[in-house]
Image 1: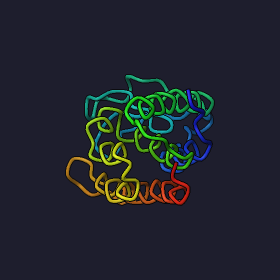
Image 2: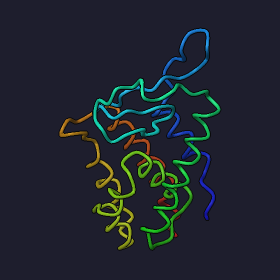
Image 3: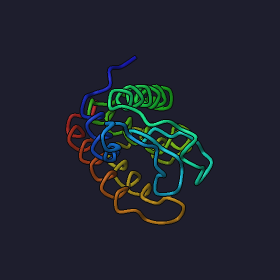
Amino acid sequence: MRPIPEIAFALARAHEALHDPKPATALYEPYHDPVGFPTIGYGHLLSREPWAPLDRWAPITEAEADALLSRDMARAADAVLRFIAVPLADGQFAALVDFTFNVGAGNLESSTLRRVINRAEYGEAPRQFRRWVFARGVKLPGLVRRREDEIALWIGRAAREP
């Protein structure tokens, strides 16, 4: 497996920042993401049942949050390697790993983003990233910022397209 660039982890941590720990315990509680899915740590999805009661899940430590992020990013990287058939620079790979971590492997697989990349239309990718800023039909400022950060990674390496 291709190593995941550290910048991909940094991007995920920046956009999926840990919520304040529970006082006196340094434990991080589950929370609902912007569309109501139970989540914990750095955006680790606990359930696809919207607004499920959070007391089903125990709080976690920062080390546990880091371990979940590592596993989730490894799954996202594996999906990128499965679905992208053209060479990618490290920044491009990092951008796609973060994107896939955020939207899911199934969405990468069915996306126009994947199709344009696999046609080696590297310059078209930023426009496609920008289409992924909605959650349940609502444009979220956090997703706009995240996609722009992914695009910056993508473009930063685009001059050295493989």
